[in-house]
Image 1 (cartoon, one colour):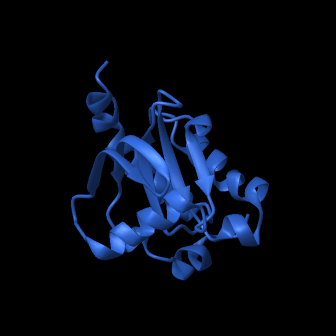
Image 2 (spheres, helix red, strand yellow):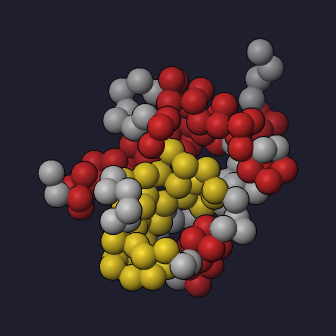
Image 3 (cartoon, helix red, strand yellow):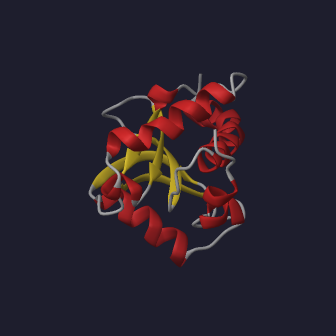
Length: 143
């Protein structure tokens, strides 16, 4: 299957998953699908300050809960990578979103991006659900 077609149907699934991850309690700065020659597969990367403050292990629990809550999506938790904002590719993605705001998202093709050679990349647009969400965390009902 063509790489572009592979991610095309996943962009919508990714958006749904990102919204659920936010509802599960993980706040994030930006998210993007990334394809590199090294990995030869698409990965959904999520940039979160909480990776630094809470630790990687604790940040994966909302991802796992979100994937389990959405069994019809074609994304597995193993396809999700959490990144600290200080990582070069994460920092550049956040910078690009601020520099070139778009309602449609942003494609990056065949270029160096934050010290990583990117074959193809789709950066999700900033939306109300992709903004820091204190309210989303407060609105979750206790279990």
